Image (cartoon, rainbow, N blue to C red; front, side, top):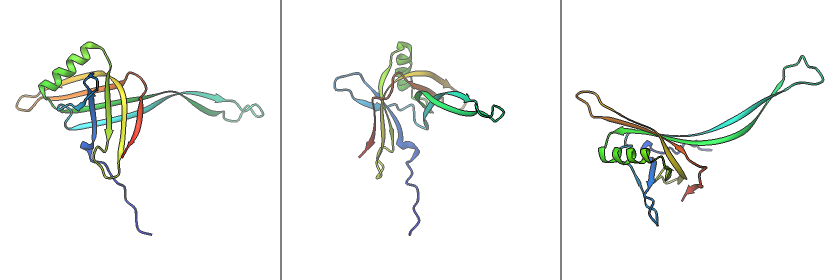
Length: 152
């Protein structure tokens, strides 16, 4: 049997697109998120230790139950001022925005798209003399993803 190798997605193929709120809604990427991107899915669990009733000296057994799940997205790049201003305005509004987080946008093996309302958790614009200004942003789900779909 021949060896089978992973079919990787290129780093720039992890993309976040922001909705414009129109009907129909149009989704576009921000030019400011142009170097690094990170999608994180996490779960919060409750932990209970169950005692051994037959032999209380034995170690207890740990059981967990998932209480919640979360989606966050971080992005960074060389600052694009119009894109930064749009995100600053969004952050100041405190309102969620419909977004698409896409993995493997154009890959031959398909990909995954999360449709999710996000809020901005943080914005950071930084600069060093003689260098271009950099930008980082963190986004968190405002509600559970409405869709997690395999791209054709």
